[in-house]
Image 1 (cartoon, chains in turn brown, purple):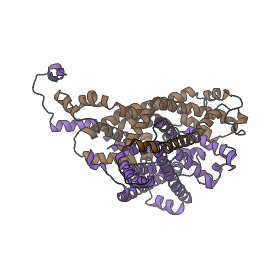
Image 2 (cartoon, rainbow over the protein chains, first blue to last red):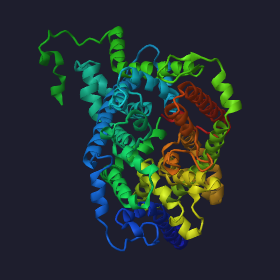
Image 3 (cartoon, chains in turn blue, brown):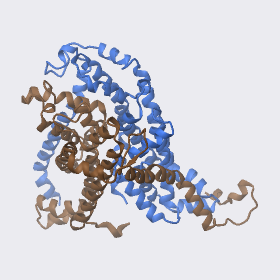
Image 4 (cartoon, one colour):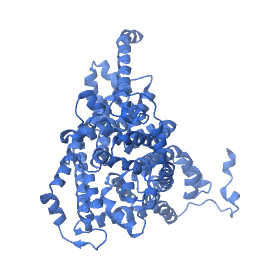
Length: 287
Length: 313
């Protein structure tokens, strides 16, 4: 056995080097747009388009000061606060409502559990647009258009079935004996949920929280239809103002603001990448 | 350890009857309490809107005046009198057919490359995954437009004159943005690959099977449930793409409607032109098409998706 491994070691080592080189080359190409974004946010107006160089000739920090002034007389801090408020509300809503529903589906018995679970799974595939217009009409009737309610309230009603499914998958992996022990100790379903199951589900809840944050932060469509007062805009919506007017003098500030808008996601990614990557990997496999 | 044997009743001060199992009805009641937010959401924000949207699709509705019943007129107009509708259908289908296979193919190739790696696997996995999170943002969509624009990097390198402005190419730039986000399916592929028992490969190697043979006879069948999962998920998502097309075409779907994706046109009809009935008809047609495509994928999956581990749970 050892002789055969020695015999094949050389080509394998070569393959490995080639593999790493290939992956690094692919990464360089893939990360180029991000490097370009960072570089352009620091370029003076005349260099933005004309020059092929990635590195700016001189650093133009004024792009960022211009960006901080914001759009339509609304400062970036306000836009950032709005974005954070919506994403924060969505995180709390999704973690709470999705874990409650998931516990029922994963652990409790009730009538119609099978059909309801099938329906829940089916709503993962349901295109958002099929419910979009009536939802808009409902929120319009309630006087909630141009408020944050339509962006946050649905998250408290577990409408993102993907996360219910994710938490169900995780909870099914926990040993049943835990709840049986809790029940013998006198815990009803509520106490065993909050005291036993929920703490153990933490990895799935963290995954849900991070994905909800990033997806809500990136979401453009819903914000586009529900918000129209500039002071209620999120960073994403404010960037939209640059979509129509693409004059080159606004290029630097536009990309400076793009960097600011990406920063929270990048920070989240760096802090939680293990949860993100593994959460994504686990979403489809186990079960 | 033994402390847990003190009955909870003793701690809570209730009379120490033997712990009784909660009745069936009581437990069922608890389940519905847990489910209540979801039930409310499913009823009020999913089922009711689906029904209302079906109803509205047979009406003229501008959000201010009461809906006017027009029968099938929205549908006939869509299918027979609206060339922009068909351009949006063609753009979307072209995009789905280009972007999804390229994205999944790349995801599989990279996952296979990373699978056998001993060092740096974690690093590459995270690095390739990063665009999947950033790419959905308006920020990156704007970068994309600039890079592929007239005078952008790609123009400078390849002399394309700006793909974003060319009807035949604009859609391709949006597809490239989707392909760029291959990290999410790649991570799922990688997790699936790691669950294939290595003994299978060892046995095949002993039998003298080539790497290609092993790939076809072991990897593909063992990975087929994961391939199927990724295929369904990415296809459904691709049908609904919006942000990059909006950014690349300044919300208009141009040039020459080449990036007028279905959802962009739906937004335009419903929220810009205030034809909510027409947009609802479009929404229901999309729902039916996605349902049909998913059903076809499920039907064909019977012949190529192989579930090996049914008994091993």
